[in-house]
Image 1 (cartoon, rainbow, N blue to C red):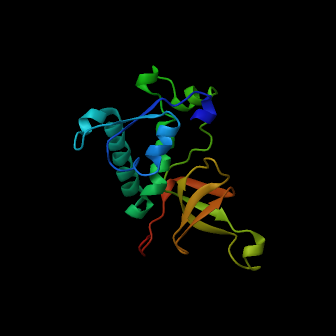
Image 2 (image 1 turned 30 degrees about the horizontal axis):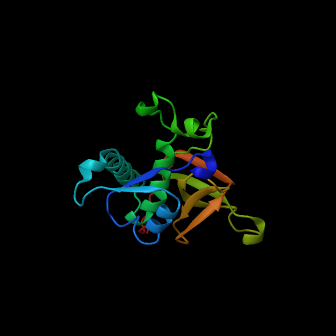
Image 3 (image 1 turned 120 degrees about the horizontal axis):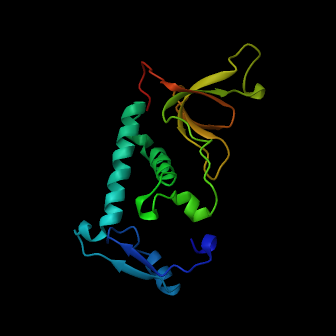
Length: 181
């Protein structure tokens, strides 16, 4: 945040959950960042963050169910959900889009696709033989963010694939007889 805005971080509010303990505490002290910790078992004192966590969890749950994916995909989906929240008008920002406020430029929506939709990824010539298929069916996970290429799940080879050469069928999902995870 400091590098992007040039403004100094003054304090950090945490819930004593342990995420900010260890080497992070001396780091904050050394850089003049005041740590504000709420008492144990008082999530109501960190209400805004707790409500956002709940919102993110709900959206992840719905997206997992909608795409018929196992919980092991929750990390990928959390990133997608947070990106979508940052592209959604926000009441505390008087209806402005957080990403536009932060970066001071118009947000783009061109990269967005329907989560969990059916997608075909081009297989390059050096990865196939003459009569092999030129594309493989995958499940769309998330748009490019800080990297090039869409992230997709290849259910046959059971791995994440990154590609920019993708054809999306946003009104369709993959229904496999075998388990996806």
